[in-house]
Length: 114
Length: 117
Image 1 (cartoon, each protein chain N blue to C red):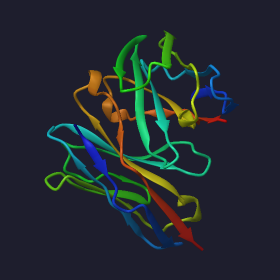
Image 2 (cartoon, each protein chain N blue to C red):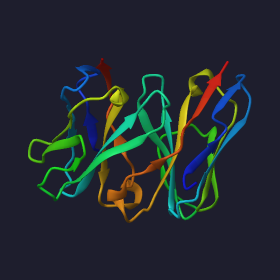
Image 3 (cartoon, rainbow over the protein chains, first blue to last red):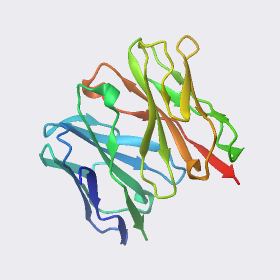
Image 4 (cartoon, chains in turn cyan, yellow):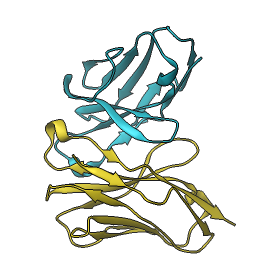
């Protein structure tokens, strides 16, 4: 299936732990994103990579580190997890020059920090 | 910086009726794109409809249509013949046409639509 796939779908972990979320797209898109959806459902961009190059880095704590080994993969590593990191994290992809195309989103990873 | 405002946190519609969700945005750009996304309880983000700012004609996708008023910076979504499956959170979103570091979807706060049988 052509899609944006994220793993895991659910993640429950203790404060202070380090965790990673993986994302892969097989749509041939050249740009990938991480968005955070908070408890009030507000969606805000965190990072964007174009062909493995970081092009958007919003005001995000240094504990969050994205890595893009190739243009089809974008992972998110979070160090020293805090209660406030609990949210749904969405990966998305698009073609940079086709802004009208919108994004294709993954199904999200619900992170719960206890 | 661009902002997107959805002033209706919740809306309700009877099945088979029509409902309109409001969205306004603020930008100094003349070229951009607007989108409506649907997020059902499954949390999947689904693109419903999109509009290019330089096109005056309002976009239509089956039962979904928009009323795009560029001067007023308004982009409302009309759902006709509402169905139970339309119940979801609806997000209005803006994307600059400039690309690069502006290449991001900016979302409104969402409108939760309930469909009554």
